Length: 153
Image 1 (cartoon, rainbow, N blue to C red):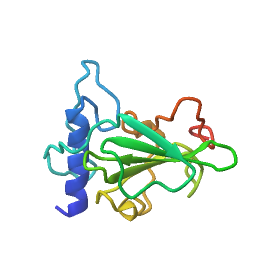
Image 2: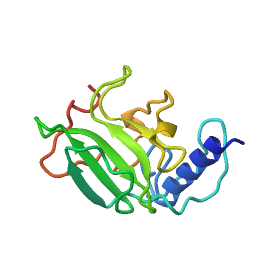
Image 3: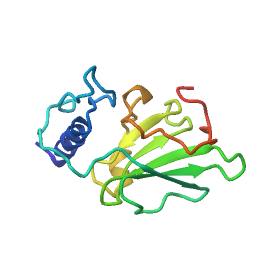
């Protein structure tokens, strides 16, 4: 198994540990179902992944590191709308992006998971994940902030 597959499996297991299924939803008992990612994978628990609890925003690019378990919303300097959320793990490293603008033929709200925490390039290898599979809380925006483009448009 390659490193990417191990990291994706750890990500899914981290969601399961938070009571979420691989698609970011909770099952009827609030328990996560431990499903490996496509292509199989390890069932190692990733204790580093937690639902983000702190939200900051600004017009500049997201910092390389931030408060653990947080989200940084990058805002458009003229409209004040959200362009992108950057998600940080329990070590304060970037682990994902949620894009609130269309690009690559994908609608607003699609997301990327970084197979190497702290390395956004590892999550931008051509795979754009649909909004319907986003982990819980990753698309949250600060109160009063709207996405640059409405979700799924």
